[in-house]
Image (cartoon, rainbow, N blue to C red):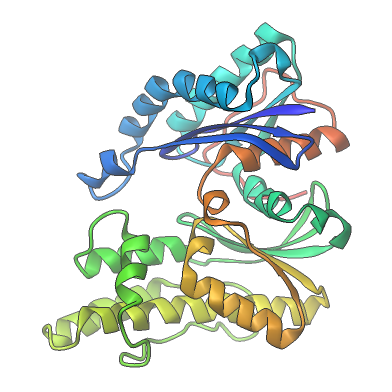
Length: 333
């Protein structure tokens, strides 16, 4: 089955064609990072307008890359929740129009479910390992989810305030780094000593929840006291490792509590090399199977939406064209 995926939940306009939920034939991503850099963050109205401009060319580029025409598509999957509402509506409107014009089934996909399925694209045999644990770590979300089966999820832990990606971005802003903050902070941290500045970790007892707002405050207070004496690279390294250690330890605890031996990490922050190394070391020490997608599948992309849509269509009926678009919704099932 050739599934067209469309992703427009934030500032990436993406279209992809995935065959049978496994083989990526095309995955085109048009980023708006340079555009939003002048504002220091994503401007929702600007993002929506750029999606309108870029979506049709991106769709055509994906078809050309896959050597297909619209008539070769068997189904359409589109992110319809959660995200920037105006941005989502651009992708959903286009997907519904295509589904109607082509008489093809359509399915609305939860953005976080897409991140879950990025792991299935990276490791197709993951299907045989269910149940699995997935740590979803992005700019807007930090969660640990137990996936029992396709479409069946249990939320084990989530952030009580800032998401990990948000903490990276806010930390970068405090350090005077340009947008996008997270990757720039990571590049600076790679040159520093992570033990020079001992930032606090919010463990929250035995809970699998996360909290990063206190860490951000600790960074602000340290910078005010330090007066520029400590090398910025050392500060960035200490700040980064404080986030990474909490993310890694919480997934370790979840594996021990549930007895599940296959763990995955997904979302934009999963591209962070420090996190990748820490997660691999933890998995090796615990004897766990770890799956982490390549960087191109960590950030927002339509291939993961197409993959999630394929498996949804294998286990449930397609959506009606009247399905809603939602700015917020938890991943449940």
